[in-house]
Amino acid sequence: MACRGGCGCCCGFGHLNEDNCRFLLLAMLIILYMLCGAAVFSAIEQPKEREVKERWLHKLDNFSKKHNLNITDLRNFLRDFEEAHVAGIRVDNIRPRWDFTGALYFVGTVVSTIGFGMTTPATIAGKIFLIFYGLIGCAATILFFNLYLERLITIIAYVMKTFHERQMRRKDGHPPEKRRSSGNSVDSLAGWKPSVYYVMLILCLASIIISCCASAMYSPIEEWGYLDSLYFCFVAFSTIGFGDMVSSQKAKYENQELYRFGNFIFILMGVCCIYSLFNVISIVIKQCINWILRKLECRCCQRCQRKLFRPKRNTVMPGNVRIRRNISIETDGVYESETDGRRMSGEMISMKDFLAANKVSLAIMQKQLSETANGCPRQIGTSSRHNGFSGGVGALAIMNNRLAETSVDR
Image (cartoon, rainbow, N blue to C red; front, side):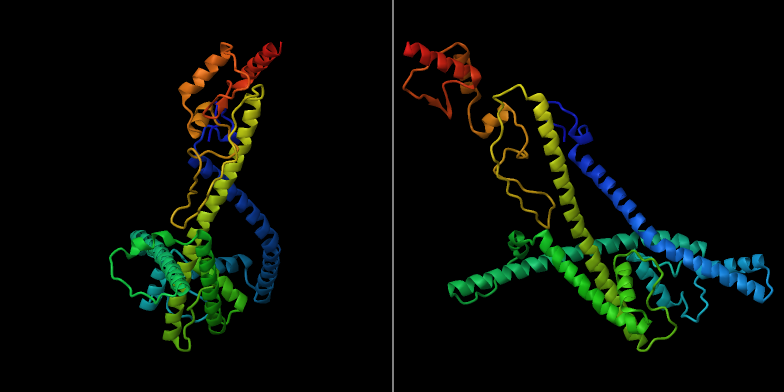
């Protein structure tokens, strides 16, 4: 990231490489994003919190006066209930938390990293077992999510290739060929990997469809509003898992087994889609960060060029370099062609880079400079060109040519 010519500014990142710059820029953007989110949520939720707290203190004071209870004893009693609530005790009648079905639901929230928090181990043995169980289970589930994304990309590539081949056959008027059995089916899809934006669009649509269908199931069965159900779907599928709303917690449901099976399927499909969507969005975010770094580097290099090369009038600048960019889902890198290395279009290049790019021999260039410095006369009326250069190089060559023309005129 350091500018050419030894300049170490680059907007404060001159002494860092590109990966470190990207890391620091992302960290600053995340901090800024968190500060903005905190400001918004504080402005939205704090008035409601104050209202609920005032209403609760008013009820607590009236209750203690009505039943002639000591307010300190009443608060201690409520603290005991809060401890029981953490262990899974509720005021309403709910199903047991640690029967086999409840435990299976709990381990599902553990390995999927949802962690609702409505059920947590209360014993030392359970907490120790959870550490080792979650270590392997979470790693295996994350691997499953990554493999799910790979399979999805392969399916999209296969569909794109098949559709293209059918279109070409219809266009050429040939009947469909029989499928050949070969072991290079994966290699044949190498050129059909979809764009990262195309995959992101498909995952967005799939996540919306799954969330809407799941909300249509949760809303009447759990007696939630439809918007509340959508909120639960995002919190659960994104593995945030606040625990304020948790499905399948009532003691009895109609068609209970069918509902629990549907709940499991929706959570599994939703988590796979949202997790894959997060991976794809992270690639897009990285591309945005790379774009910001390129803009910062380009502006910084232009400032450095104005400072370092302002007195020089024959500085070699690159022409309009065309850069072909192709962002693939398999890699978030940007492929560049028709350039010498990874040079930005507005970046100053050295004489050596210029000669290499234009295939000019350095020996010929030195010979021309030597002849110009020695005042080698130029024959008028003739044009001697050497690989694109004529009559020397630079302001000294122009002066020599002008003197030669003057002497001939005289």
